[in-house]
Amino acid sequence: MKIKKSAFYIFTMIFSLHSSAFAEPSVADIQYRAEQGQSVAQYHLGMMLLSGEQGVVKNYEQAFKWLTVADQNGSMGAKYSLGMMYYTGTGVEKDAKRAFDYFTKAAAKDHAKAQYNLGVLYDRGEGTAQNYGKAFEWFSRAANQGYPPAEYNLAHLYKKGHGVSQSDEQALKWYTKAAEHNESDAQYNLAQMYLNGEGTPKNLQLAKKWFQQAADAGDVDAKEMLKSLE
Image (tube, rainbow, N blue to C red; front, side, top):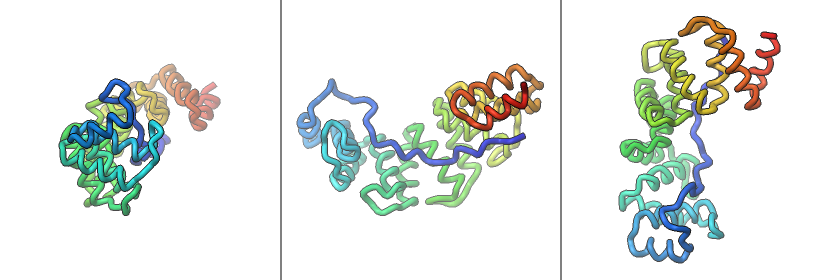
């Protein structure tokens, strides 16, 4: 069985505002609220300075300042974003240990992406000692919140028996969840499991279904597998 390379990587494209806590406030309004001590505004101001959204000129030094203040005022998102700044070396010197510490704080507050990133760091031994059991724990917590990359990595740990007893049945379960959330590598791996009868009876129809979904997402290997099954 050819298993796709695991998705043990940290997503670095996080510096964008997907939603606002205000009804389309002006930058001046956010600045005012931030200066008045509102942690949500402090976080959003920091993210705007980090990403350059809403016409704000990027300023990593000011972004770090406001995110730090927001973190001190209890912002979970700020903890995660500060972790990303340290991990990527954005506006600060790269420091995996500090990234680990910030991710740990955010993960403890159930921030799914922070939990996922913490799993990655434990798996790689970055910023902390390598620990597959801890990687499993944090991927599990993120996966149970429905975070697709964590579902995929959890399946991979079950498949390899890293940090948990090897289980094709559990690998199948979590690859299925990730595949249903459009993770193309999970779709490919799931197809292989159905093709080879791993953790489930062989099922050519389901194998073709998942190879097709992976192929539709641009997976070259899946396209080759479909040709071989014609």
